[in-house]
Length: 621
Image 1 (cartoon, rainbow, N blue to C red):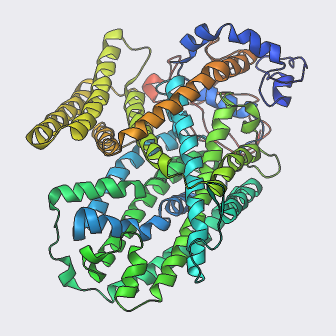
Image 2: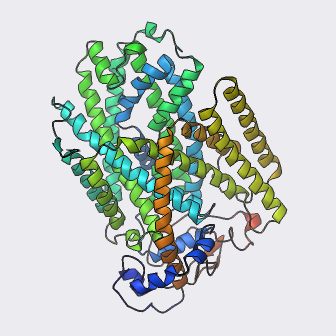
Image 3: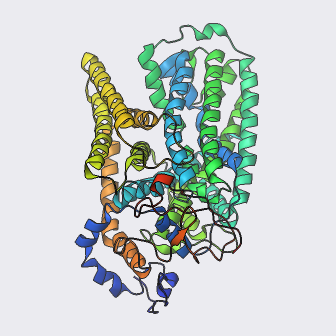
């Protein structure tokens, strides 16, 4: 696995010097080969291994230099807006109105926005409590165990890399249209591919910017997103000036079912808010800024989408909307051909911000995973000069570049959507479990919590199956019964289960909001074709093989070298301090502060899962 035979450094909890210098985390290939003989034992021990916050911080400290804390809530909000409001805002609104909901597409966007808000609230609590790079990976590894977290994190990495490549492919077409050329002007055929070097150039430019500076990437996104919003405001002003109220009749031509069908269609226009949760480690005050930024971006984007939808259906009768280029065509239909130029400009700006924020998010996920040695540890290093994850960003660039240059990826888009919704469901389940689980509680009390969480998860799966497989009265009755079961399960959790973890910022109306998120996301998963899940199953088989052949061995060797982990049970060198455990030396080299996990007072004396709170570290030692 590596060529360096250096001996481990002395001292408890030290990372072997060879592990620091090698890309794989093993001093030599023979060490990895010897560990392979223990694969069944390690799989059995690690699959359900729940990490605590102290261990996550120990991994972060072992990786070396910290990321620079340069972001605030406004940066988070604008990064999320830049990720979500891409070129699709000029297309999805008209497509949903034309064939799904008619003028009631405004309500479809409102329903989709509320659905997204439920998931966003779940992410916000986790991001505020555990401000570490990695997003959903950290949340699930500290709630449901390592195997579930591994499947989630690999799905996210695939999702973001494919999304960055697919979105970048649209850049040359929109830019060519903007300057009056054919959409294929900047591409050329080669064998069975359509080569697009502009897409590759965009990926490289974004990655180079992110390697140099996080703050610079954020300010560049702020400039691009602000320009796009200005373009959208001009488009809305021009569009509403051509409004015709008679175009709103009939308002619900496809029935109430059309509103929800349209909501299912446009929900994917909201995907992307989860990306900003991966930036929590670089936020100055994550306990305050992450919830405001995440919820703020969803609320703002919902307003933008609803106004855009209302604008298009007032300009043109819904049945005359062009689903392929709705706004560009609509402006020509109302005698304002110059409006199509604005649409092209807004799309180009949206594509740039979408690619930038996507690559920023996935590089942080890779960094967090590599810190635990589930991926190659070299990817977890932070550049001391720039404070950015240079190696992880380079990895993402290399992975996305050939896809961006050579393929449009349409067969994989549904798989990406299925994986994203699956992650939303798992995060909602993890949030409920985090609040309820206490390993020191009596077995009977734990069984009650396990049973009720399992009931909600099973109800979500059944809800999706009924929606996908049943019709007519059976479908309506089945959905109503399962919705009632989910409500009763939520009430039972509310009345009978003690919440052992109540962070400063927490999801309101618990457990009803996460339970609603589970049902709504399962409902949306049922709207996707079966091929998406077959592709996802093949992908899971591949990443499980990697997990068994490399990840469990590298992570166990890394933790054993530090005297902690699945074989030891706690992080090294952590001593009790005000409010929880702290390391006397892990962060001594860094002046930045970290506000992470603070245990509630009634569990402060416990040992184990909830005992390792990390206090705000002082800026000077």
